[in-house]
Amino acid sequence: MVQPLISSRDLYAGYGKKMVLKKCSLTVEAGSLTGFCGPNGAGKSTFLKLCLGMLKPQGGSITVKGASPGQPGFREILLRIGYVPQNTQGGTLPTTVQEAVAMGRYGKVGLGRRLSPQDKALVEASMEAVGIRTLAKQQVQKLSGGQTQRVAIARALAMEPEILILDEPTSNLDEESRMELLRIIKSQQAYQGLTTVIVSHHQETLAVCGAIYRFTQGTAEKLTGYQEGLDD
Image (cartoon, rainbow, N blue to C red; front, top):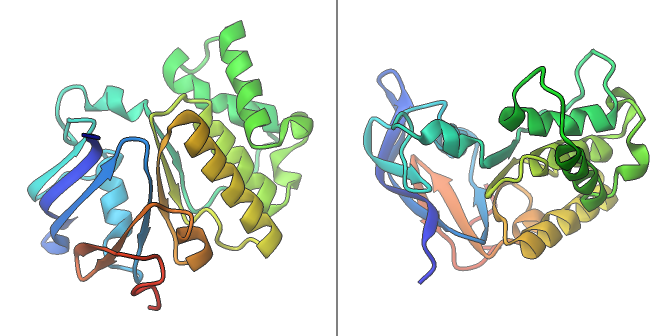
């Protein structure tokens, strides 16, 4: 039986006295491609914060690879989670694509330390995987939205993650860029057996997912098809 890498049961979480998640139960199985959808404020981002150790549960339970936020060893688990946030702009400092992707290695080797030949090979492989190797010397600030998203995904892949979390990866992209990005995400998930979670409002994005949970009023309902209940 496939074991879940992420699991919550009767989970309560929020900010101060305001509960955003209430009795939220779901599982993300190892090697799966799972989608989260639902209206703004329904708890999707709060759930991601719990997975990333940015928030602690106030009731019920949540585990990532068997450990809960705040428990001993959870920090090491975070090094196995690749996270791509909604805003992936390159910032204001001049940074090449290669430098940006290499940042994915520093969580393991330590900031300020030199990358080994093996680290550099992983950076090259990550750029190749998402089709940006030819852009290695270009500045991230000059790239298109779709290219910038690929850089963010390559940086996450360079971490050698077991779990990849993508928050609205196809928002603000044109159709061609969206379809290419989805192809990359699906191919990496299949090729590496990478447990992948996608948060999205787009039906075409959720259509590539094997399981979909719709967040609403603090709970998560597992849908039987990607078109069911997606119109907010």
